[in-house]
Image 1 (cartoon, rainbow, N blue to C red):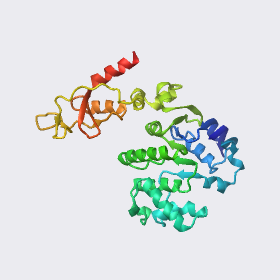
Image 2 (cartoon, helix red, strand yellow):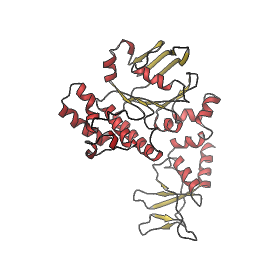
Image 3 (cartoon, rainbow, N blue to C red):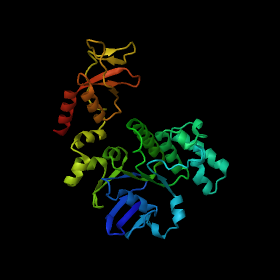
Image 4 (tube, rainbow, N blue to C red):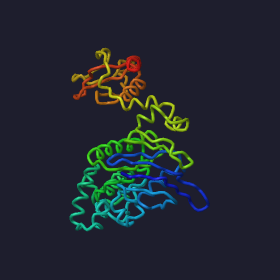
Length: 334
């Protein structure tokens, strides 16, 4: 567990970046630090590995004050991922990932073998091992950055805007890959982001900071969406927090109508809705494992206001109109 005990950071000139922060980051969970620019979230993150020294207060890792730890030893036990990956441009991808294990005493052969396994875990094949950072896309560089942070198998990872420099499609892919990794590894992670959607999607807990460097609210994503502490949090989370809240509810129990009127191929997979100029796109499909937010989004985007459910084989097995979804949600609230 990482614990902030009444931590203050005042920079020369009197600017307060962090104002009496008391916060716990649970072991094995991801805590997202979110807020507007200048709210102290990155400063808070960098105090954990002593890249920034607090003016007062203490930061503890499993009950031990980080100020009493050897700085180099502390940082070797903490993975660190930044916005633009921060890779060494003159080293291959493989040697970038192997850097810390070599520093910790592994032979170069051992470190490179472990690095190859890590590259596969973050979704990069062995073909990337001999490339240099300049030969990679932004998303690929971020994957290498995550692999390098994991290379020493640290119990703690600090991530500062790790996905913000890539386009939305790549970011979505990285989110899925990262959630899969975290489910397997169970690291204690502090992630800084300015994107409330990213915080809600990735965080087990979310800490919302004000511009004054004070903590406004901390809780699970569901708690934040359901009960914002004040007007600042409500505005930051967004007026559509009710729609965001559907992300936590499964579509498994959602009643569906028979597949009538939808054009299907020979295997029963959806082709589209009938149109004067040919089939109109369904806008996408959902499965029982998806969330109600996915269903709502599909119904809104559908040209006929209907979301299409498919089974494991991709065959359509049910329809949900936006009216059906509204009635279902109203029934749950009553």
